[in-house]
Length: 118
Image (cartoon, rainbow, N blue to C red; front, side):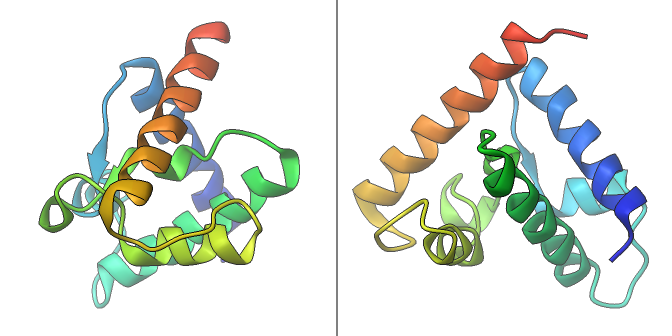
């Protein structure tokens, strides 16, 4: 996995956090110019690499800014599964617990971006 692409993803999500907005997986793929086939899968692999980086650093999970329109504004199930593997989340990928965790993590991302503008 290209470190340059992961860095570009991180910058894209930092900018989104500064603007206090979320992005869909398709929007991220388009903004990073991820080529087909399997565009969303490739994008998900980049997001997972970024999640591992942020977990190792104890940073807010900028991957929280990437949501699925089909899941009512929550990230894909793989987001919750990987956070579980990393010891950062215990629970399912749906329901109130997932929604609250995601909301809290979004707030952490937005707050961190506000503390470190530009």
